[in-house]
Image (tube, rainbow, N blue to C red; front, top):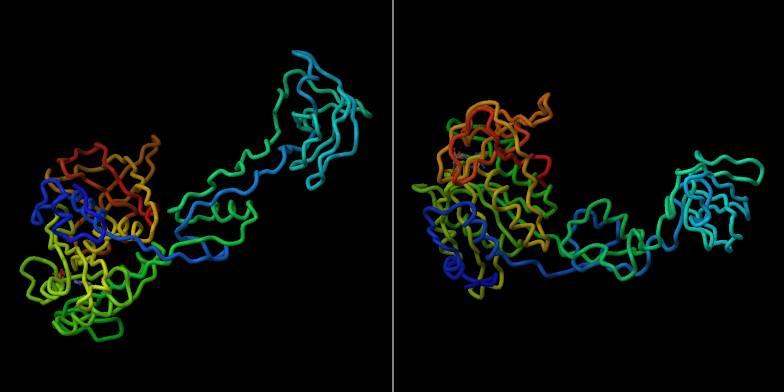
Length: 434
Ligand code: AMP
Ligand code: MG
């Protein structure tokens, strides 16, 4: 059975084998989310320089061969491979004017001759090989090619070897990187069609939260999640919309969700989704949309709400909701485990799986099978060339410093049990994350 994006929570749940909102595996939650989220369709044209980090909306097809001509990869002498004697030096006669980059192709010189050529210059007609100048023994107009230093076709860049005319240079869905921008420039193209930037609203919930600049009364904490979320969204290349701290009050929460639906494609909240929360967040989420409340078999980040909230009866304005837990480490872990790929998919990108490093645990790691754990680790290169990973100490989900000290997340998979000292574990290096 399949359900299209835009389907209800119930319809999608029926597609997930063994779906139980109270005991969902990380993989099931990821599959659910991937099936649920819609993709932004609007496309805009941007000048090449403004397109870095944006999502390509259509394939870029090369209108030309790059390079447009066979040309030399070295400074040296262009010659015919068929003139070279097998296993013995060959002396050729220097003919014609030196070929410089930017000049047109020169006519074919007579057989047994060669032409002085510079890197990037078009190969003279009939010549197919370049002898690098450091191998050449030149005397007057005689150039001797020592035996065995070049073979036919060496040091010649072929027309179209970078890109052939009609070839797809970049596929739609690509998040544009510096090399891509250069590649498009090499085709002589000034603009790119990219998808509209995804708009992501976010706010924090909890009466204990204080914003920076406010005095910290007893029992209160500064709201750090909004800053972490803002930073993670910025790195992802979406447009973050900061809606502040929202009081634990149904009217304030409802107003916040409604305005998020009007201005954003997705809304991220933190806090207020745990079991037994005394606040109103969950009730308002449930009332305003189609939302599943999950307990995920993972640590940290067990409680999470996911679905769609809507403003207005028609549902014309809606936003995908990620109700993240409140604990600062859980916010980051759930973001990387679920939100990152979902937002990339919504933005029209084809997310590549995160690279995982296999690293050797420098200490025994306790782990219960039946849930996915994300522990904070510091990866270093050991003297034997292997990667070592040490845990950052206390792994409490409120200890944000553990994320700051770490340079990677140790992923202990669902079925995996404890790991002995020296055993290998998977690590997501933070520098691989956008
Ligand atoms: P909750 O998920 O609302 O039960 O919150 C779990 C824990 O995370 C509590 O200790 C909260 O004080 C803390 N917390 C919730 N939201 C934030 C936030 N925005 N910044 C820092 N800590 C938070
Ligand atoms: Mg709370």
